[in-house]
Length: 73
Image 1 (spheres, rainbow, N blue to C red):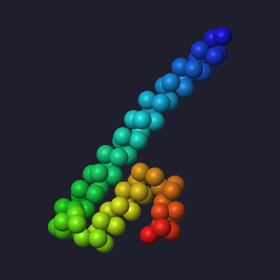
Image 2 (cartoon, rainbow, N blue to C red; image 1 turned 30 degrees about the vertical axis):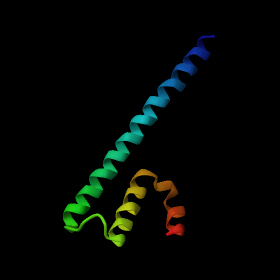
Image 3 (cartoon, rainbow, N blue to C red; image 1 turned 90 degrees about the vertical axis):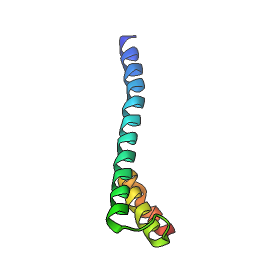
């Protein structure tokens, strides 16, 4: 009974931990893209620049799925 309660608690805690990790990586990707926009001194409407920024964000947020994204591009 106690072991089941502990397992349930850990499962609930993992939801909040993974949510926090996802938010942190999204903020990190956003900062990198903002930095690239500033350094490039280009508007975020040039297609090749958007592609570069999108790939960088994908690399940061979901690096394990980046190879599938590169196949599509």
